[in-house]
Amino acid sequence: SKGQALADEYGIKFFETSAKTNLNVEEVFFSIARDIKQRLSDTDHKAEQPTSIKINHPNGGGSG
Image 1 (cartoon, one colour):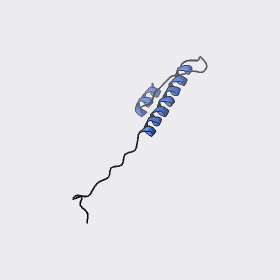
Image 2 (cartoon, one colour):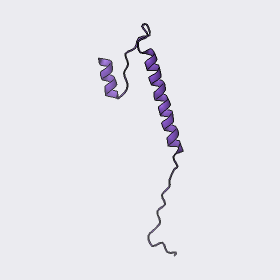
Image 3 (cartoon, rainbow, N blue to C red):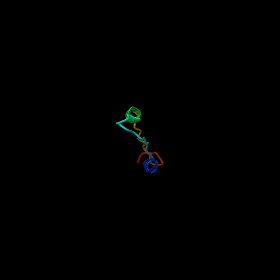
Image 4 (tube, rainbow, N blue to C red):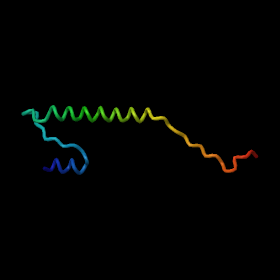
């Protein structure tokens, strides 16, 4: 389908849904909720990682 092809092009999920027949409505909701939860978790883990600073010492190391 065109929708699936477009989703593939953008690298996103594709679901065919219908509110009228309740086709995949719950599945899409939970899929989105899982994705949001995962992204928030990934963001939290990145924030917990310590920031490191590299200091370059000049060659020779002696005093002036």
